[in-house]
Structure formats: structure tokens, C-alpha cells
Image (cartoon, rainbow over all chains, first blue to last red; front, side, top):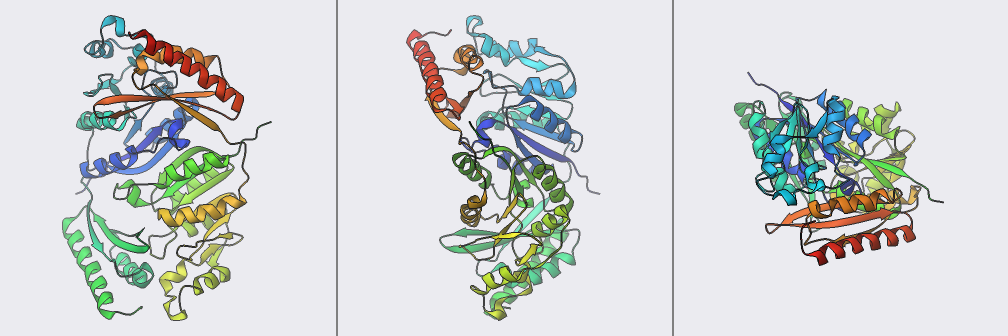
Length: 248
Length: 248
């Protein structure tokens, strides 16, 4: 019996959409959730605009078991994620004594500027997420997990947040290298293998380096026996075509 | 008089959501469009599932001037983007003689396997997008521009696709380094600068390297004079706080 737990990622930040900052969080969270047995089914990037954040949060939290957000919880005026999450859930937001106490471990009272106190604004009913890197916490409200945008801080928060997340049966995967075979040569044979195994997901992924395409065929399923069987079928197909030494 | 042209990116592919492949296309396209005068306002990643692709394409193409998609136009069974785009627009799809002719420049007739012929499936009414890297073309249907997922191929297609895209006034930007000032120290002063300049977008972006936060304040506007004025105001604020040598 396998169980499926689903998730979406919501990246919040103008700097990603302008191209100035290159997102590294989606790839990290995707890999992390896959290993943990949570299936990432969608990711979105939206700007620092409250209506956009609210609409995306509400679309995603109704559809998936969890929503992981990154970005917009710092001390400056463009950090509006906490307020947007409160608006999305229709709850109050204000300075949270628990968050202020945690920040008090890092900042002296006269260092707790109005800007820094903004980082203690937490929606009512949320639980805090630990931030060992720079103290100011993330939070979880309902099924929405709100984390920082700076990758090292986000990664530390994710380690804490995952402890409260229900996980399903992890999806296993195996890759078969098909470096010297073009996709156009094995495409039909691979389709037959895939169609005969509807419970196994099979994908073909070309990359291009040094003027040459390299292909990987990736087999994904939660069932270890089905994984081994499908991988063997792909390997046999690849081996046969390589042995042929001619285009199909 | 400034003109705004908007866009969204739709990344299509299970391999991005599983974390196996790390997307590099969103960052590239974002930077490219910004320079060209097109404002990227949203990005989404969806799996290789037709209904999901159709829903996302239809949501995005109605809302933005352009939608740029990447991924899913190769020769294997998991490449379903062209069919999904046809379904989204409610048009027919079949082998396109123009695409077959282009692919004939690369492949001999007996190399045009059924898998490769899949890459000539183009929705009715689409114009082709040139692919100098590996021939099989992308296409544009209405305001949706469909490109490959392999970065080098996508980048070449984007160079062709951009020629047919209406561009607006480019957003200019300038960055002020605030490396030795924490965001929590300048946050309130920066808010005042931002609130006094509603037509200028001002963001503060921390990054964390070698155990230290580094902050950049980025000013964005289409107006060169407003950019210079706002940048000078930020620089004066940063200079003053650095001179103080003490927490605000």
C-alpha cells in the first residue's frame, strides 16, 4: 500500500522575475521532498505584490497537501510575505512574543530596530520554524510553510519544517545512460516499454555539452521490484540498439 | 511615455519537479526579457500531464502578453507539449510539412524515425521558431512561444522568437552595495526612501556567503533620471549609516 503526499513551492520575489537573482531553492526543495516521500507537483514564482501572493497561496493550499514558500520574510519594506499569508487565511497578524524572544537571543534591546521587529510579525495561529542561521523564525500556518529566501537560511528552516510534515512512500528512481544513442533512435522502443508499464513513469532527458547530446532514461516508481524490472527492460533495449550500431 | 509588455514562463517537465534536473531556463529567460523590455510577471513549473499543461497555458495566456514555455518538444513518448498546446487552443495538430523539410536538412529519409517525426507535429496556425542547434523547430501559436528544454537549444530559439515579440520600455536598474550594514539597520530609512518614490521599485537582497550576510539594494524604474536620483538617495543613506559606525 503506497501513500501519496503532495506539495507545491511558491517562490516570492521580484528579484527572481527580473533575473537579477537566480533561484536555487526550487531545485533544492524538489530534491529534498522527493527523498522525503513528498511529491512536488507544481512550483510558481510571483512578485512582491500582496494580491498575487494571496491568490497563489490560496490556489495552491487548496490543491496540495503542503505549500512551501520562500522569500519575503526579511526586515525591509519589500518583505510582505507574512502579511500576505495572514490575508490569505483571513487571520490577524502582529508581533509574536515567541519570535521576539528568539530574536532577543541575537539582538540587544537597542538593536531591535523597527525594521528587525517586522521579522517578529507572525500570523495568528502559526507555529514557528527554527532558524539556526540568523534567528528570525519562519512559520507554518495550516498547510503552508513559510521560509526565508536566502538558500542557507531556507535549507536550515526546511530541516525543521520537515519534522512536522506527513510523508508518503518515497518515489524510487534509476537512471540508464544512453549516451551514444539519439532519442530519435530509441524513442519508439522506449514508448513500448513505457506503455507496457503504466504504473512506472519513464522519461528521457537529453542534455547538451561540448557540442554533443547526452541522454539519460529515468525510471520512477514507488515499487522496488517494478523499478528493477523496468530498468532491466530499458537497459536491454539500449544494449540491443547500441549493438546494432546503425540507426533504427 | 512608457509602454509595458508582460510575460510569463511555463516550465514543463517531471524532471524539474523531482529535483533530478535543476532548471536554468527561468533565470536566463528572466534576464533576457528584462533587457529586451518585457516584464516577466510570473513563472510556473508543471509536470508532463496534459491537463496540467492545458490549464496553465490557458490561465497564463489570458493574463499576460506572452507566454514562453520550455520543455516537452522532443521525440520521446513523454514529450507532450505540442499536443497540449493544440488542446489548449482547441486546434488540430499533425505533421507539419515545413518542419519535416527543416528536419530533412539534418536527417536522411531512413533516419526520420517515427519518434523523430513526432518533433514535426505542430499545431495548426503556428509559425515555426528556428533551431540552429538541432533543427527540430519550436513554434509560436497566438501569444504562446514554445521552446525546447535543453538550455542551449532554448537559448537559440529565444534569439529567434524575440524578433516577433513586441517590446516595451526596458526597466533600468542600479545596485548599491551595503555589505557592512545589516538590513535591520537600514530597513526603516530605506522604507522612507521607497515610500517617497512610489514610481521607483526598491528592493533589498541579502545573500549569505562565508558566514556573512552581504546586502544589495536594487533600484528599478524605466526613467533614467528617477533611477539616478533614487540611487543617489540610497547611496547617501548607506554612506551616512556606515559613517555612524553604530546600530541605528
